[in-house]
Length: 134
Image 1: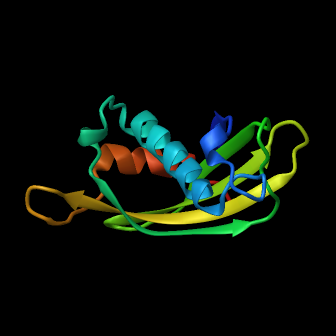
Image 2: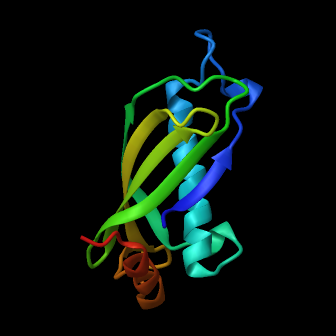
């Protein structure tokens, strides 16, 4: 079961075209990713996270309007030695339509040494348990 986070667009998320601005979709992915990290790592503080974002992409499918609830689902699709890929799906709760799909690549990072490192074993196990089968 993918991790899910419900988000209600804020007034400031809306652009002149009267829908959620395209850049905000990345903010929604970031919010879901951060909550997912904290859940998998059993941590409480952002400064305890040991990953950096290497890449992010988004395919826009349908506008998100003010007053709608966005359900952001996230799950891993690839796990390497020091990096992993997450997939995102954003659907509108009220009618089920697909608003966007995205992907991001994260790299395990040692901030003190300023270099990449292996994904911590406990976090890797959490990612592996969330990988879709087949």
